[in-house]
Amino acid sequence: MFFQDSFEVVGEVRMVLGNQIYRVLLPNRHLLIVHVEKRWRLTTPDFKVGDRVTLQVSPFDLSQGKIVKME
Image 1 (cartoon, helix red, strand yellow):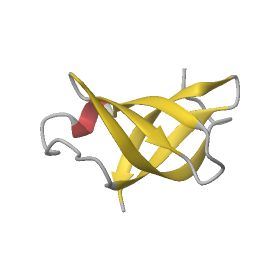
Image 2 (tube, rainbow, N blue to C red):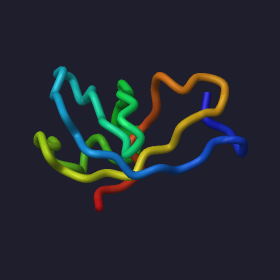
Image 3 (cartoon, rainbow, N blue to C red):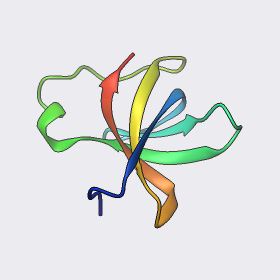
C-alpha cells in the first residue's frame, strides 16, 4: 500500500480506536484512520489524544495512513 509515491504529513491524534489504530487530524482539517508502522509496534508506547505524529499517506487512498514517527 505504501510505496515511493507516498508522502509524509504531520497530524494530531484525536481519537484512540484500539489495537494501535488511531484517528488523526491533519492541519487542513481532514481526518485519517492510521495504524502504527510494523517495526514500531513493539517499541512504541501507545499514543494519546493530542500527540503530534508524522504520517505516511498514499496518494491513492487519502483516508488512511501509517504513523512513521512521533514529533
